[in-house]
Length: 217
Image 1 (cartoon, one colour):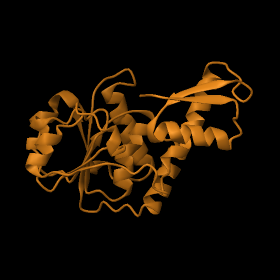
Image 2 (image 1 turned 135 degrees about the horizontal axis):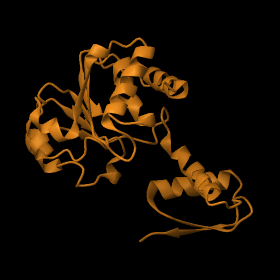
Image 3 (image 1 turned 30 degrees about the horizontal axis):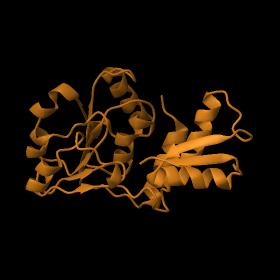
């Protein structure tokens, strides 16, 4: 089912970031809910082809996710012929040498040496998060370095996307989910790094005064 909210966000971000993927081939994930729009964003940005990789999970069946993405594309008048769908278990059996951009999305991870060896040298892997969040089990960085494939992180504090504003809101949502009245309660905030600091500053701006911060490490 198409979600106009997600579509609008996708279109706004493509315009904001001047995202132009013309003549580029993208390898990303086939997933559900908001993540179904990753291949849609690539298509709306003009990608030559979009190959999505997925599997059955607790979030949905692979076949259902394929149908959903194709239906969204159809509703947006996107040519469905640019999409290709591969089950994760069969990924390594496919020719991966034409891809320009590979997203480090959940259904694609881990991007191991077997996959990296099949990529062309001009390919780029996007982390989908900041470099300080890098996990060795997600990408074989040594294999990327040997082949000269750059692994690019996201600056989540970049004004055009500004992800850190969500941190205090996530804290408040978790409190509400626990049935707690957040504003007048004493809160002990466990955290550190950019995310912990962003949550702390955001809560202060929202008027939270009676809370303590415990920094890990």
